[in-house]
Image 1 (cartoon, one colour):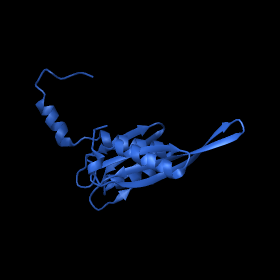
Image 2: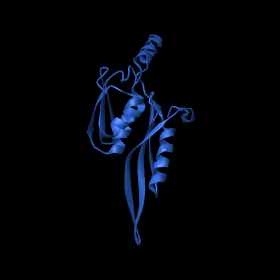
Image 3: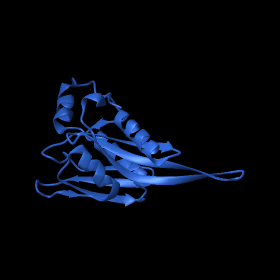
Image 4: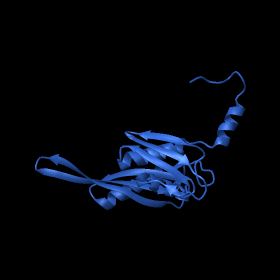
Length: 168
């Protein structure tokens, strides 16, 4: 997405979910596995990948490689996010709300793993809609990537000359 060079980072990797998928063919079923892997450096960079393969270790390896290629930067302020945000992916809806220092990481399931690996220490979250881990993780990463630093937003607003605002 943003072109972050993952070779220079020390990334931690966590397996969130493994699923066995069956394809029905003539003569029986063919099984394969999907592994949802989240990687992060603990300093504002996180990514997720879904690896598919005939064997579990290979699916995990592929998921990690995909996650490394899809790293996003997270705008953080004192171990939390700057403002409240709601993100959606499929039927998953994740509410991310900043919290005071010392609150801790109030999150469950896939949301917690993503926030831990991103390095966020104080946040309140609520996962609504589906409990599908893949969509919950995607919604969380999408939300974190769309949050901007308020100073950057303010600087952009001030830099636009009057009369040149774009509509839409």
